[in-house]
Length: 190
Image (cartoon, rainbow, N blue to C red; front, side, top):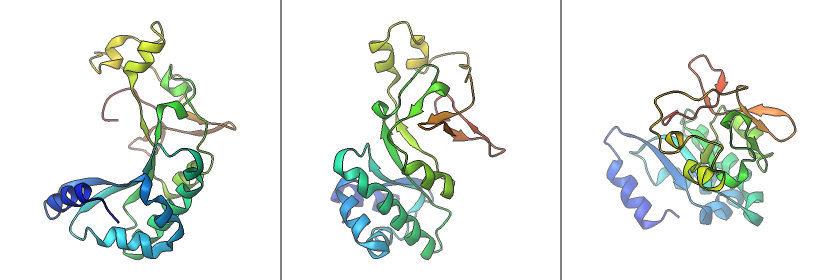
C-alpha cells in the first residue's frame, strides 16, 4: 500500500531513534476506511523499526473522500492500539481554506471538520493545518505584519481568546500546552 518513495524514506529512518510523522496519503483512504483494522495494521506493520510520533491520515481531504477520512482514522487508531502503540497519535491535515478567519489566529474557525474534531478530542490528538501566512498577507495586505508571515517577528502575537473555534461554537485549538490547556500560536514550532 505505501508508495515507493515513502517506503524508502521511512525504511531509511527505521532503527535510527528519530521520531517520525508518518502519512497515509489520500489514495490510501478507501483501503484504510473499508479494509477495517486489517488494512491499517498492514500499513503499520510495513514499518516495524520506525518510531512514529504521529500518523497523518490524508492531506487536505476534500469532496467525496471526506466521508472516508474518519473511518480511516478510526481504523488506524484501533490498529495502533491493538499493536500496543496507542501512544502514537492519529490525525489529519487540513487546508488553509478550511479555516475561516485568519487574523488573529485565535479567531479562526474550522468550518468543515465537524466529524474529525470529535475524534481528535476523544483521542487527544492535534489537528494539523497547512497554513501559508504569506498568502494571508498577499490577499489582505493590512491584516498581518509581514514579519509574522516570514517567521522573523521578534515579538509574540496576542492570541485574543485562547483557541480556534469549531463551527457550532465549540472550542478546539492549536497545540496543547504543558498543563494540557489549549492555545493558538503564531510562533513557528508550536
